[in-house]
Image (tube, rainbow, N blue to C red; front, side, top):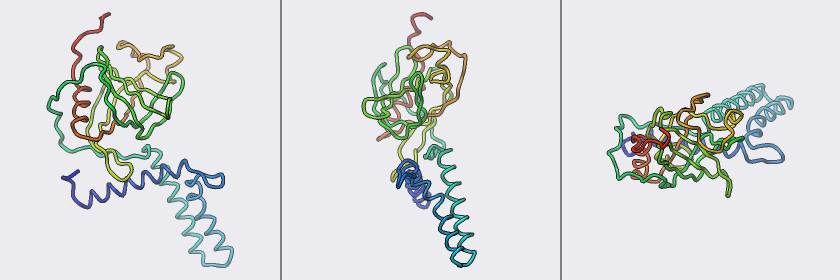
Length: 240
C-alpha cells in the first residue's frame, strides 16, 4: 500500500467506506424496510411528489435518475460481494518461512461462500481459522455467529491459484490472499456425498469453482499461510 500513488490510496479508502455502507444498509431496517430499500425508492417518491405539487419536471427526472443509480450501485455491490480485491502487481511468491506444522491453526478473517453439509451462506470478514491436514488438504472454519461455524475444504489437487493483494472493505484495506479452487463440498453435492468431511482427493464428480479471501493483520502471517497453501505434500495418504 505504501507504494501506491496518493490519489489511489484515497480512492481505495473511499471505496472501502462505500462497500461497508452498502453492506450495512442492505441488512439494517427502518420502519419495516431495509435502508437500501429506502435509498432506492425515496428519491423517486420525493421527485414524484414535487412534480405533483407543480415543481419543475427537473425534480421528477432527478428522482428517477437517483433511484436508478442507487439500484445499479446495490446490484453491483451484491455482485461483487460488497468487497473489492486489489491484486498486488508483480509480487513474487513468498520466500519460504518457517513451515507451519500440520493441524496448526492460524487465526484469520474470511470472506466468501462457506458451507455445512446442507446449507451455505456468504460470509464477510468474519473470524476464522485456517489449517492444513496431514494428507495435504486445507481447512477454513469460519464463525458465522458465536457457536455456529461454516467450512471450506481446499484439496491440494484442486487448488488453482493463490493471489496476494488487498481486501477493500471498511476504513482500512487489509492484506489478503484470494484463493481460487475447485470443490465438491456444500449443499449442491450433498445428495451425492453423505458426509461431513471433505471429499476425497479422487472425488472429482462435480466441480464448482470458488474464490474465498483470507485477510491478515501482518505480512508474516500472510506469508506463512501463502507458503503453506502452495507447498507440496510431504507424506502420501495411507491409502495411496
